[in-house]
Length: 450
Image (cartoon, rainbow, N blue to C red; front, side):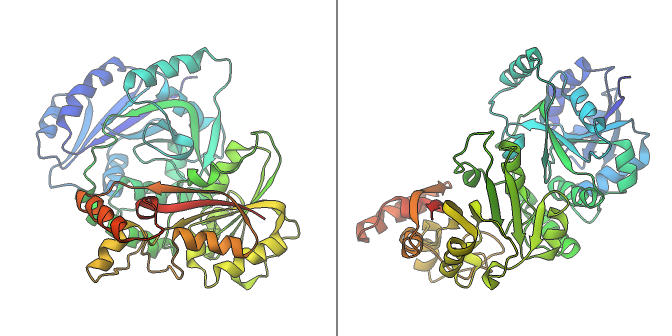
């Protein structure tokens, strides 16, 4: 029997998108029940909703947090077996809503389900740049005889996701102290996960984000600061790394069906390990994390134990093909001693360390120093919990002094301002034995063989 679907579509000052997407809603009419939510718009969105012919709710006293908004919808409407939450900016494939409903109910232990989307990292990444390509890919997928596949993840992207009514009622209300959809969903997924309901991605359910580059991040800066504090107080964690670092996983040079072992030090919530397990189903992955709160969540999905590698007393009896440090070495008191311990006790012969390490020589830091500043932050290059600082040469020297062979060192970059570009050119004129990438690179990713 086909599942009934309620689709809750939120918007804020997106009248033009609503006008465009109403045509899509009308074409889908009869397959789903739509509930349109205007979250404090000032551009006439509310007036358009009132004539749309769909169920709607207005927050006409200003923009509210997503926890408050979604709780109000639950309180005011009788919802169907499957509930999809999405922003008006998304266009879904012809059969995506049905596929999400099937995924929600395919297993009694399923929590939240997300589709693949352009502009999203990890298992949800969809490499398309327009709606037509997304729809064509969906048709190609449907011609395949392969059944729908699902991948377990730490969390799904908050722009569009689905849950069963049963699971929603069981898990309870959303945290109305949280403002952004991203953090409301993260908090909700942690609660689900602790009750045994992991998040999954339905690989052949597709959606397209029509505004992937246009969100005004400054508008939500105060909301993000608020939400990070609420989550830190709620879950006793400073970081919420729910998205895998693809640059680390990309350096695992194995065939997809190969059996090999991976240990991640500082695995946090386990996003990297889950991503490795999804890509290499025969791999054996294990993690160590110093924060017991993060371990309590990660161990719901993976083999993760609490521990501090600098105490050099990890309980593993086997050795590993790969050891991963994702933004961890800079937090250690003696990172060189740690990679020596790995070589002696934890790595197989010819095993690899793969590490991502922030670059303190990045032009944004140099710019601060030249202006007499060195301002620590909660996250980023000058994270106040960093103990060691690294440049390109210091990374190479550390591994070489412990007799590792560096097989590759790569850099990730971020857009620079015009002022930073000019400063970089001036510094290059003054510098000796320096290459341009040493100022450009935000983070280095290194692969070293024991």
